[in-house]
Length: 364
Image (cartoon, rainbow, N blue to C red; front, top):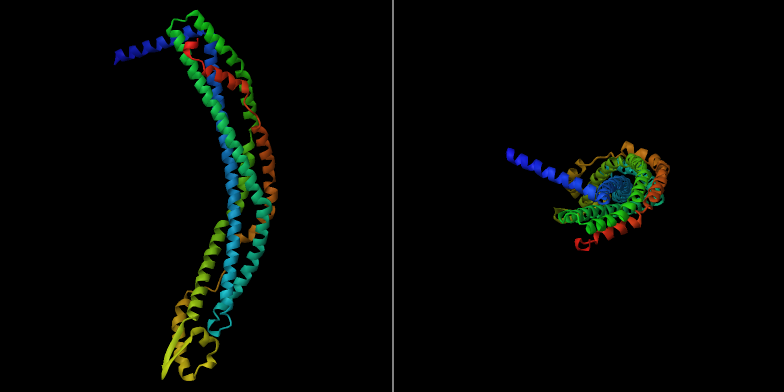
């Protein structure tokens, strides 16, 4: 074990001494290596900051899309109410189905409220939500493409470091021949001259992004206040589905034919029997009514005459009204972001890196 340790120390000493020797013999090359390392770190840090901003833009966009889906849900709920009302309207006049009356009345109230809400929600969706989703999606795409550009530059910077190390090792392995040292140092100098400007651009870029994500996070929070109502819309939808099923089951039962023998077979639908009992002979009326009750009772037992709009749906009109002013700030966040994204890394830096990367050891 101790031999291994000594060996390791020896290796480190050799590495350090070769590094020290290179620092003396190849000052430009070694400074370039250090500067490329720092620039690579700065580029990676910039890419991370841009990724955080992209996440905040994405979360605002997803919340806006949730509101768009809520508007669709409100439209579907209204369609469902209309369908149930159509079915109930054909049943309310039948005395045996007086149970249906309170539900039909409650549905009228719910329909008035939901219809008004739907018309307001559609307007807000058209004027505010859809344009907001489009703007945020566009901003997201722009950030994404800038992240790729910065990551590409970070990757090219790392490749340049690897190339510097390859060329330095080559020069070192050949005993620092004067011509090769001169050639490598001459190669390092022009690359170094482009590093300060590129670092300046990265620093300015990072600074310009400060606080940008807070604007998008604030919009996402505002939109969350509205999307919370989603649960109540789902509850109303479920309650309506229950009423819808009962109304459909009742319509099916009403279309059912019942028969008695007197003395020949006599058939009639339950609807005809209940709507016009006077057309049926007294002697068969009772047995037919018994059969009708037997068919109707199981459906009527499931019948819930109550249907209400959950409380926090009542807060939705006010929230939708204030939505426009709440998302107004997103415009300035997008402008600030787009202004920042207009910055490009100096061409010269990438050109010098490309020149360095194309250099082969045989060309030194």
